[in-house]
Amino acid sequence: MPLNKEHFITVAGDVSELDDEIRRRCKKVGDLFESESLCRVQEEQFSRGRRGVELFHTIHGYTWRDNSGLTGFAIRCRVQTIEHAISWAKDWVALAPGMAEAYIGRATAERIRDFKDTGRRCHLPSDRDKELVRELLAQE
Image 1 (cartoon, rainbow, N blue to C red):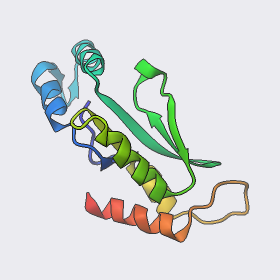
Image 2 (cartoon, rainbow, N blue to C red):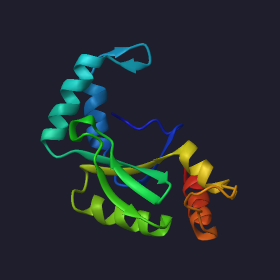
Image 3 (cartoon, rainbow, N blue to C red):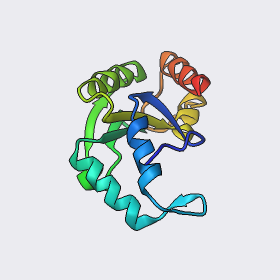
């Protein structure tokens, strides 16, 4: 489904042609796509190779997870820095140009950017992590 740019930031990949296909083929109900036609098109695109991953900040670092229940939201990669996360995403997307996208939720990016050490056991974003996230937030 096309990313809502209000809530998500693209890190790598351009699937605009696939998003256009969804807009053409799926019925709209108000501002949303009708569920049955959307699921059918998403399954077809998945069978043709469309993939997406979302970046999460976890207790151990950063994790790229599939954005689809068709794969059980599988973990694809774990890294310790945003720089490595972005590098992995670009390499992964390059394997399937036009068919893969990697993104981060705006709220996740904002939490990383504004992260304060509370002394609780968790992964602390580095200053470089925060800088790279600020750059991502600024581009959209």
